[in-house]
Length: 102
Image (tube, rainbow, N blue to C red):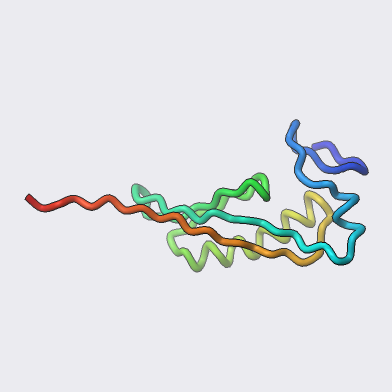
């Protein structure tokens, strides 16, 4: 991991401009978390472009939301030093396959 004044990178992927974020008192981090139902495993899992490495899963949608609410602030603090407010947008994707009786 590269950590410098201009930001934090994981591998070659730029994450956030840490210096800019941590020095603005009016800043609120916005993160969109996709909550995706996996019909084959009967579990919910997360996908997001806003918090790299946030990969969580649970059989319960509500339990997964609670896990994200704990993990997201921890990841931002540990990876970026950000401890300000976070606005989490949850997008739900659930598809079901129905078989018609013959």
